[in-house]
Length: 125
Image 1 (cartoon, rainbow, N blue to C red):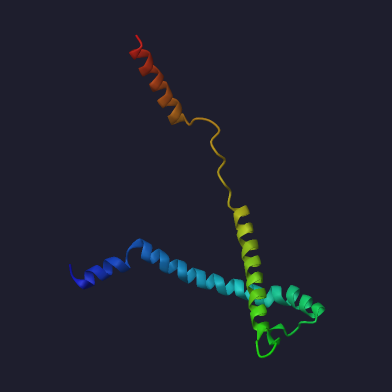
Image 2 (tube, rainbow, N blue to C red):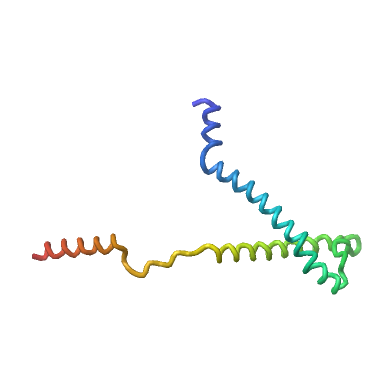
């Protein structure tokens, strides 16, 4: 088998293409979530809370040359993004209707049980 043929089979397998689409969609969705956090959530919720705590420029905090403010800023940003993702996933789960579990046997199962019972009655004669 030639190299080009093997490469073509590898690249056009369904799982490789699905993975590529997933990565691209994930990157685009990441930009949406980042924009929501940076442009909406942060100005509405985080900035007033930081002003009230007296830490408006949290990323500039340092102690003895250690810029721990950047670290704190990254942690706060992560927590905000995680919270927004939690809200989005929770809302999406509510939109997806789950099938109710079957309460009894299906029609096929009933038919199979009848056949089973008939076969049992014939062998007991």
